[in-house]
Length: 175
Image (cartoon, rainbow, N blue to C red):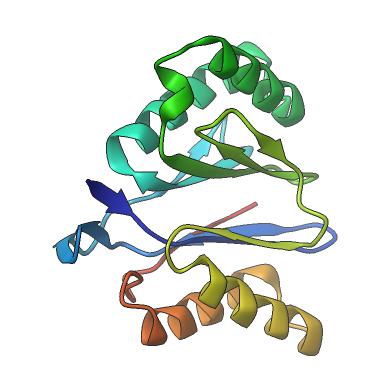
């Protein structure tokens, strides 16, 4: 299965940044180095990043994009309506993908199993290198005054240096 790997999001009082590496793998082979896994949606006011099986992740992403347009940028409503639809569709329920979606106020993790999770913390990560990226970002968030963009860039660089499923071709979007 072709997989997309690490996505990291960090927020503070007035900003949120999401970073993604560029690596796409097939089992233990790197297939692509510069994949774009983060996108701006709804007039640039919503960020979304995906990880997991590529076809599944893109399906999840496309469905979310339709919902965020339908609910006029209301992130919470679009996320909940997406998973409601998801749970009712027998084929879609088995997707092996995760997304982080964020606007200036909230962040959510949406799973291909039809779950929506609002993280307690300001740091959240998904994908194969999530543990590495999240640990690095949490340490930086707790012990520096770096803004979210600097935290995600630095943490993803750290994750890329120790996780074989994360590379240093990092893209970042910020609100």
